[in-house]
Image (cartoon, rainbow over all chains, first blue to last red; front, side):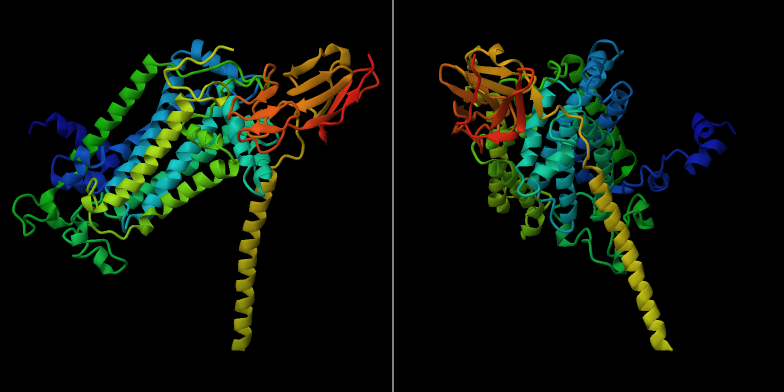
Length: 428
Length: 154
């Protein structure tokens, strides 16, 4: 018998010692490929066709994750050259820009991916809200998501100081003083965060350690739980899941693994048989195997995200201003754009209100969203008409936040005076 | 007998809880305390600057120390150049006789008082003395009222 190339590649002893099964070209092997693989078994064996539609999620969660992966890789590369010392850091940035091969591309990728990740995570949150996908049993995963959003912001912020240029120095000065206005413990907290009273060497090494190990480690932990919960909560929210067709998630009991939990154990033998089954028109009919349908989409998206970030990094350079100088405050000095809305709010008056209360209330309200929503209609659907009010309230808050950022970023000139975006600032 | 057994079990349970919570609390507290430095290698908060006559009439900004030396004839004062709001450096605008902060738009009058903007406190004035070598000695740890001058006869 003549062996085909597939036989040679996928049926030999070495391959089988690693993967246990041959090339997954039938449904049984496809399910085995997913369940027997440590990295793939986060996926279900089968997924709903509708869950794969691009408009369902716009792929925003995956995009966020891929950006995190890109950030981890480029971040580790940058660590080989960057030394977190006030005399060295800025020089190392210059080296990365002008001396190290592809250094400028790696740095640009890290910067643009960071900005993109904030946007992607935020849009992901909006998607989950507008499709009411946070409802039972997914409340806790929304909570995890809110924390992941905060971690994204903290990661960006701690990374912002590291180039040790004017932009970094003054942005962190503003943010650290923001910590100082926390009632009672503010001064102590600021002292602990900066490791002193000024933004200096202690602050630099602290931000560095937070940025390269503490926060990424915690973020990875949360991401793992976030993904795991997607599976455990029954995959993506679907409009009909509440109706019981797909078997709603239930607490405890044998039902989870038995006849009632088709979602949870969709790789039962019956589901894997192609053709006519007693399940015609029901769940198995509406599902496809993750390998290759989901996995190919994931790989393609990863490729797309990487290419977009790479092109941006080739076309646009990340900013690097003059070296940090405590004597010269740039005019105007601005926080990183994702905090500039907060800075705008701060300029209106009492820092406790703008800097502490407003963001705390916003985060608290976000955490409460899934527990306050008692609605049933519209789960897994964009902008369901019965959710008009909920959609409106959220949209108003989102628009207000964007407006604050816009005003702070584009309409504030020297001495924080108001200017139109097209208006020229006076030379001084 | 059984009473004794329960007592021993209770005691051991207590011991277990005590050891677990004690260890967690101890390590947490120590870790937090560890993060608060006991010694700082920051620039000193009391320092000498130039001789009084080095500073011309009006407001002089000393960037490396982040202070303003204000001279009014023989009278000298030293003000902080760190905005009380978010720590940026306000600029002296001579025509308007005010300090304007670039970060959030706070404005301070020539006495350091807040005229406008989010700054919660006026700019503090620091104690200034004449050191034995005739140079000005500024102590940022000592806040003095605006009315206090250091008078140096030329």
